[in-house]
Image (cartoon, rainbow, N blue to C red; front, side, top):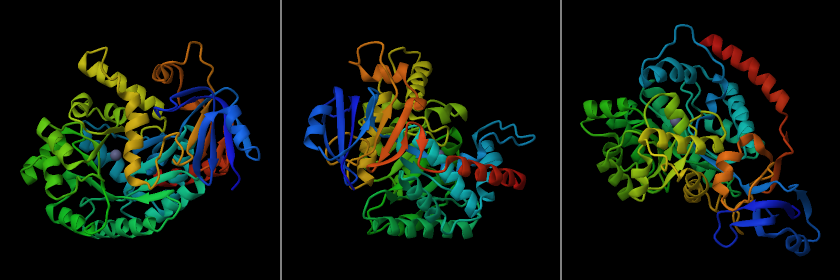
Length: 440
Ligand SMILES: [Zn+2]
């Protein structure tokens, strides 16, 4: 691979040594960042490099989505006659569990490809996916892994173990996680990683949690699990098992420093302390939480306790800049405090890279030498000084501004044109989704 220099842009990095460069560039060599500096200096240092002109746009680290469900891609525009859920369990049972049970292998492949194209177009270069397809468990993570490699997006995959479809799919799900983690551990380039997926306390028996805990023994793996997303998860956990979700999952050893606890909307202060003591990372999903009307996560309280709180979409659109904006607005609205939520862009640009750093061998989502060469160029000409980058990201940009996406040094979208055959993938996805909807 020849060296690539992406330059002639306003470079925003959260790195202390070079937070902002008015005419900045990034040199990429072998999938990693070799240097960050002024365009002229890097062109002089790498005279033989190919040059990608940012045309005075913003050069930024690739964005990370710390919790999503690629399989939800084929649900866009789905309307189920008579479906009028009154609460979160009704949304799960009436929509998502009907959909995931009906997925075929080809549905899984195309929902992943569609979701990954959305990632690339929104500048998301790394995703933590949480997959479920009880009718097609075996090989499902390998199918997604193949799509991930085709798209060239960095991803950490897992299969959500649950008892809701019986012991057959539950056992297969455990094996799928174990097989895929083992497979991903052999992956030398670090593009695809594996975690152990769990649905949520409300659909997992003690016996199943024991099995899942035993599977990871001796292997450095984390669990990716929904935690206290809705009050119903807490109520069920207390009623059935006599403990709140965090206390219960922690008691099984499932919330260690490699684990991801998605949502944590209804955790109390004692649970926040348990999360902190165990080292688990939290992923906040503001748009999904608002969409499902489950409440506002106590993000300021979690941050005050020193928890790492990242940002995800939970499958609700791929635009992470939109999610960061929503994270800020949700706290302001919920707390009635116009100064709240100022941490939103740090969650996206600092906490998410900190989360990914644990799961990948090299730094992710950072413009520093030695980090993966995952970066984006946004079309943006600031009308005011670019001294406070967060303010520009908040008020001036959305995912649609991303015009070029580079992952592992590979240009996967240039000036809004994808390397993938977008039209062909969308055409096949429309055929498959029409059939899928008929089966529901
Ligand atoms: Zn989720």
